[in-house]
Amino acid sequence: MQISIELDLPGIISSAVSAERIQPIVDKAIAEAVSSAIRDATGYSSPFRKALEIQLKDAMPHGLAIDDVAKFQHMANAAVVKAVHGANAATIQAAIAEGLSKVMPDVPASIKLSELIEKAREGFHKEKHEAFYAHYEPSEYGGGWFYLDSDESTSDKYRADMCLAFNQKGEVYRLKLDGHDITPTSLPNASGKFDGLLLSLYVGRSTIAIDLDADEVESAAEAQYD
Image (cartoon, rainbow, N blue to C red; front, side, top):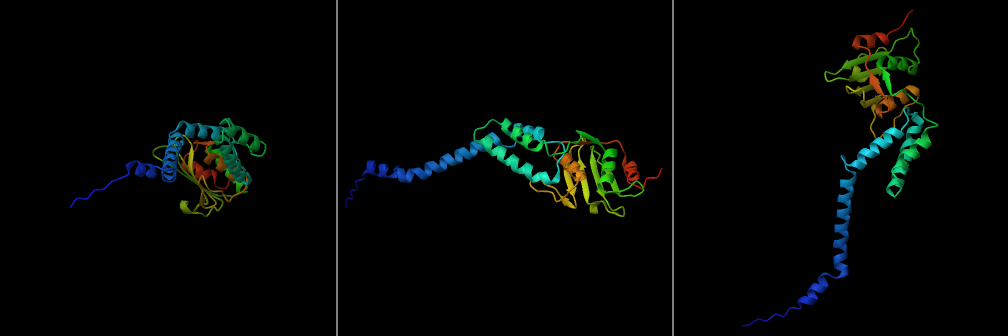
């Protein structure tokens, strides 16, 4: 028995590569290529990522008033979107600086631990003859952990309402405010100038300079008498 099969190869190929069949494949390939290019261009170590970090840090005012944190986030998002759509990257700095410079309080680029304790006393509305909880635990690698609470009877550092973790350069990399850890995507539930100071430390607009040891920190938080 002889079987003879004739194939219309040109027709089969033409059908296989028809626009209806090939378009989804092309679309998928293009989407994957674009996604890969975006990841490469804006990834963790990309020049864009580093430049954006510098722009935002330079544009952000020293102090963050709590009521304006949401405004800052909204304006930052809007500025980034506008920049991505073709505007110069300097738009990010200009938009944030213009919108926030008038409403955000300023703080020094560096603040001593002794000054931070005095700011805490003011923030807790404590008179000199009143005490509050303050505990400094230095790290063997430099920096350390600074715990604060308006309740002087706080005996466990982990129960303190506030905690700042900072490195040897005085840069705060972790902040607990009102008993809750602050993250880059969260909005803090807090109020007052002292909370704004702590936030400015957390976002890198100010650093901590160590001028007291652990015992001196606790002593500074005790009731003060002339």
